[in-house]
Image 1 (cartoon, rainbow, N blue to C red):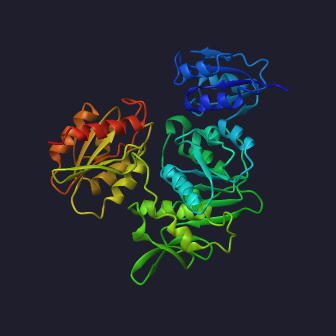
Image 2: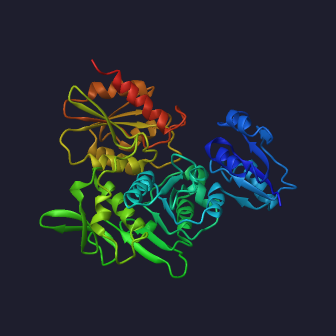
Length: 447
């Protein structure tokens, strides 16, 4: 029987829902924007669909279900209008989980989830699996469904988790929690509750011993609980152990791989690698029979993500690093920590749309680890205030001005780090566009 379905919000996610349902449902697409991203492509591919644009209210009568984009706040007038009707609401991830039978590895957290999701996909591929990787990164989840995939890795945001049902994921992880998206969730408690929904029916629950907010509050009966952390771990859990003067990623006392061999530097990337091991261990190899050495070796040729602590250039002895994907203070703190043991100083470029975030903890980190801050964007002044005069800071009118100022302040041996601690929407379409702009501006510095 054909269902009458309303898709709310176009863009990447809405377009994937449209493609997925076009052959089976009677569709309406509604968007608060008069010209949402993806509109031209949607109309070209699916001209038969009823498009309602620039709407603030919608009469849900006669609908069987609503698929709500994560980009639309549940507190918005349109979302509240639809929720009040009682029509069943789904997310694109609900559609995905109902469409596939293969194991799903689900990852969320404030920072590192894209790295962990793509690293997990890489490791699974090295172990002769055929994973599809998507969700809140790269391709939308529905667009990665392919007949040759034997498992899937999904990065899930708090916006996706808060509006979807719970599913029996093969494994689910919360990597860490720091204040983020408080403008949408209203409080840190509500944000954590949204993240915790990933655990509810997971077969294996993966949490971070170093972050109490990730420890599961509610799990399904019979779920296996596994932790990772920066200390030595008990049997069956993941951590760092010392052997013969070297630090090893280990499962209990079982050595897996030397930490110094990991391709991505920094303690936060050791934690990311441990989370990957905890997620995928046992997939198809048997819980007690996995070749841990092969698992560790599979990590070693992972190259990392664009715009995440990406070395762009070295000019006149100064290294330029693009960390545009750092869209909250916790990500910037992790980037600063990863650079903390190297010689030379850090000149930090930060700012943008802070999404209602408290910058005080970041101010403390900058005061400890940064010689010079160049702030820009809507909330650049708030970051400067958080430092309280402990580090020299200037304000730039644009990213181009910020790069010029940072290059002038840097000395040979220094790092100029773009790690904004903010979203990009005050000046750029997304963090990728901001990172590409940084690359181009750095290229212009070459003699």
